[in-house]
Amino acid sequence: MTEAPLKVPAGAKQHLYQRIRDDIEARIMSGEWPPGHRVPFEHELMAEYGCSRMTVNKVLSTLAANGLITRRRRAGSVVAEPSKERAVLEIQDFAFDAARTGSIYRFRILHRAVERLDSTAAQRIGLPAGSQVLSVVTIHLIDGLPGAYEERLINLAAVPEASEEAFVGDPPGTWLLRRVPWTDAEHIVRAVNADRTLARHLHLQSGDACLVLERRTWQAGTFITEARITYPGSRHHLVGRFSPAGQGTPTGLAVP
Amino acid sequence: MTEAPLKVPAGAKQHLYQRIRDDIEARIMSGEWPPGHRVPFEHELMAEYGCSRMTVNKVLSTLAANGLITRRRRAGSVVAEPSKERAVLEIQDFAFDAARTGSIYRFRILHRAVERLDSTAAQRIGLPAGSQVLSVVTIHLIDGLPGAYEERLINLAAVPEASEEAFVGDPPGTWLLRRVPWTDAEHIVRAVNADRTLARHLHLQSGDACLVLERRTWQAGTFITEARITYPGSRHHLVGRFSPAGQGTPTGLAVP
DNA sequence: TCCGCGATTATGTATAGACAATTGGATGCG
DNA sequence: CGCATCCAATTGTCTATACATAATCGCGGA
Image (cartoon, rainbow over all chains, first blue to last red; front, side, top):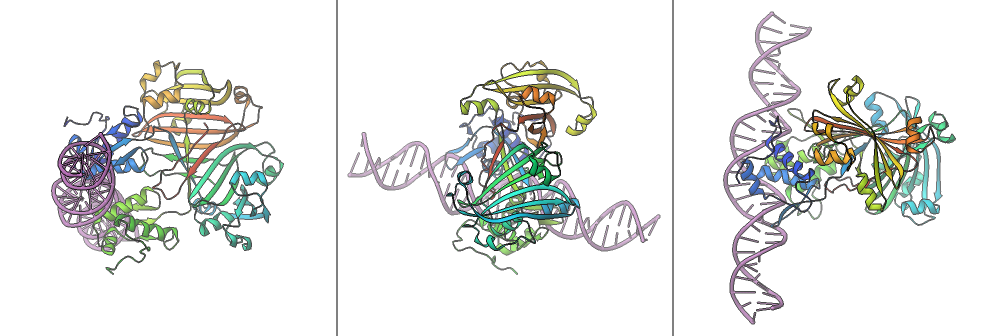
């Protein structure tokens, strides 16, 4: 009972914390411990690995923070939902990304108008039809070349000061992010063929594949903004990196 | 200097850990500490909050794990880049997703062979050229219609039993996931125009936009598998949902 | 001047112990 | 038997300490 851990992968000279975590994760991911299965108590793991409670506590707390297990006082810990693959996509700021790669970033506002929501858009974002929104179309230029075409709607009820903003220094996305932190976001990624308008603005052939990222953000339940950003598929892609059980920083990078 | 923290939000009867974390997060999010700004050293925070090093260490480690700060030995911690939007895409199992929507899922293996890595693939995945891999091409059918075209490489050094697997019950992805839990993954999402082969298999016109998801997974540093899954852009998209503040489990959903 | 190397400093990991908070189960009372 | 109460098990947070590890800084020698 007070035995060494079962699975010690070949080159197991990692840190104790990592080893315990790998063991438990492996058992959960492999299905050996199905959802609902009770994870050993902290004092049991202490005995099994011959370590202090702080160490196993850190492991289990991290697993809980990552959604792999659920913990309850007195009742112990149980395995939560099974292994869905989760990829973290980090969507960078255009200007930041350009600075990082030594490129020059500029943008041009193609259209800017206060409009009223039509019914399809209203349904999509969950506001009443006819609500006032600011509609902004922006083209993002990296070293003078079009890098993305952005169509954005901003809820003027939530961000009234946007109606008087000309977006000369920062593009709408950056401006908004600084003004209104969001608490929830929904993303959709699609592939489309460029139509004539897109092709013209992105310097593509009509029909070329483009990556479309749609993002809708809310703050505490109120809709803030919807952005549809179209990237030339040939020149850009999204990159994500993920370690399932988390402590490993889900680092990532996205060419915006 | 050994003073109480500056910002104590109104009802500050939380735990010390949470209070320190909220303080630092607030200063980062508000821009008071811009990217690159040096976060106080652990011993400085100890003095400021009058607590032990373990407590501030846990705060800073968590912030680092969440990507808010970057830590380096001897140099200290600095505020990481702001305004990265991180979207969590959850990539579901085909069969699971089909069951959820009441569709019938089937798959067909188009190609299956033990091969040796050519140099470009070897470089991409970080194995020596010439390593033995199993190459499998699968077509996924939803209600009889092609839903995705999958090209997969499996590292036979890591999963030798794959060489004798015919994949009759489960498609390669599901089979692998059950056998070998992964600990790291890298994802790339792109848009491409369908070539003739893709068009034929996915019932598309040549040139139609397709969404390509490339995933490479590792377990404890050893490469497991690479999958390139191509979806008809018109019929499928990826959906993600995310709450930024970290602790809250990022939930999401993806139509595979 | 430049390079290598050690000293210093900050973080990374781990220990042992302590007390608080929550809650499932046992106990005892009406 | 039903219900309130107490107890004990388990997790949550924190302290104080120790040693390992990495990296910068500055010193000394070539």
